[in-house]
Image: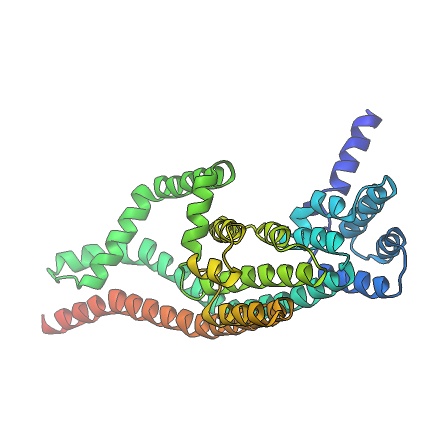
Length: 368
């Protein structure tokens, strides 16, 4: 019996859902990477650095993960092995860039870059949350009122409207249709949506073709697609910069840099790699695949002509980082007024659907 109790205790202890300190935020990871980068500058042994970070970690789950990474380092595994094992926490980009840092000998710079990148990502997330919180709260309140009126108020007035032979306006008829639909088919509709969501998630995990289609579709969503492209273009150009700076052969640098999580863009970078292997310039190969933008391609071409390709790729990475930040700010600035407009339309629709027939009924009563 005690063994079963201990098993339950260990399960709850290692499950983030049941721990107030189980969630590891982007800010936690950013601060961790900054600590690692700073200690690498002091030339401390890597194992000692991870042990120090584990000892100082306030987050219970992060402490356990760092202890696990330190354990594998003691066994002789690479640092990237530990980060790959916990890729669901640190993300694909962090794992891939740490792997790159090990191969290029630029771990210090990689961790510094990741810390800076994640700090900006954390700030953007916070700005987005602040921009969305109030409008979404009001929108949910309006939708709740909308449902209450449609489900309980309208049906009571319906018989009176019909007995007085008042023609219902289109807005009221739509409300009544929605009320009837959700009353009769609401559970079925929700079940279909849930089933479709589960099926889509299953196919996303098990079908590379389906996953690639989704990745390609996401890239065409206005603003969101531009932000995602800029993020991966930043990762690609920074990865190439680090490797070429470390005198990694071009073919190998391109082979390592193409490993990004978006399959649609990864396919373009793989095709560009094959073109470079066949003797074409990198700028030409990327242009043929419609990868990167005109400014980045011009910079890469200039770098190829001048022999300063690594430096130009660093400029490209900063260019895409700025694009991602600017597009994110633009998205945030558009979301709040869009939600406000949606709320206004819902309120107007609700007012017209409820009050117009009531006014007609009052006019009928006075006229009678």
